[in-house]
Image 1 (tube, rainbow, N blue to C red):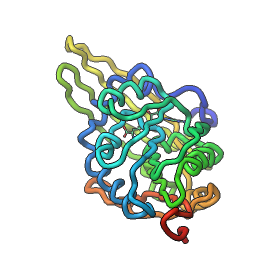
Image 2 (image 1 turned 135 degrees about the horizontal axis):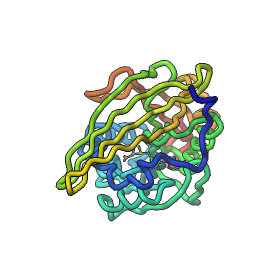
Image 3 (image 1 turned 60 degrees about the vertical axis):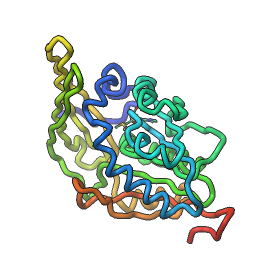
Image 4 (image 1 turned 45 degrees about the vertical axis):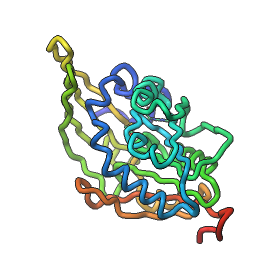
Length: 261
Ligand SMILES: C[S@@+](CC[C@H](N)C(=O)[O-])C[C@H]1O[C@@H](n2cnc3c(N)ncnc32)[C@H](O)[C@@H]1O
């Protein structure tokens, strides 16, 4: 058992650095169509005006943006240059910017802000509050921010999963194993093992550790409120997920209508 694990502010999982090219095989873009359609419906339902612009913080491979960009112009931010390169390939028409969601300030606002599963990398309440503050300052009055943690404390599943896919000449399979290292803590670890088969049929095995935040539902709602939003939790509607919620932050005010309650 390791001693108490604390987030490393610099070191990202190798998936987002030297193995970024393999990311589209780990979680193919086509798999995101259903959830991206759900996020788009939420933006359209909760934004006080028709949403035209979206900021995706922690965009990764840009797989959600790929399905949203035809309806809402997307600006994509990620801390990992290698992931921005992967996203640029499928989203060449979108603006891509390097940045840390805990600090970046673009000096402009967007109708919608999406912080998808990248929000899981906020491994302390302080980092989560900083990311929520970033979302708030970039959300236009009457706009909406959406946060999608994989788990909250109440629905955490210390489980194991497997997946992957085949590319034209390469293939990837993975095992994902989640556990909580600190019984009293607010983090969990996702241990990933990747099997990477290259063009020559050779297979490499890589272990990659992802440290993630795990906070009670009430803490999420409280921190979203503290950032300045009106918080809302809505059931995640997806054919392969049950018992999960999406958090929204509604930014008060609107050029066209009254403020959110
Ligand atoms: C699982 S990927 C996101 C996938 C994305 N939802 C998609 O649609 O493809 C997580 C991403 O979060 C990024 N990330 C982690 N910490 C970050 C931070 N502090 N600021 C910005 N991006 C961050 C990683 O570099 C990685 O690209």
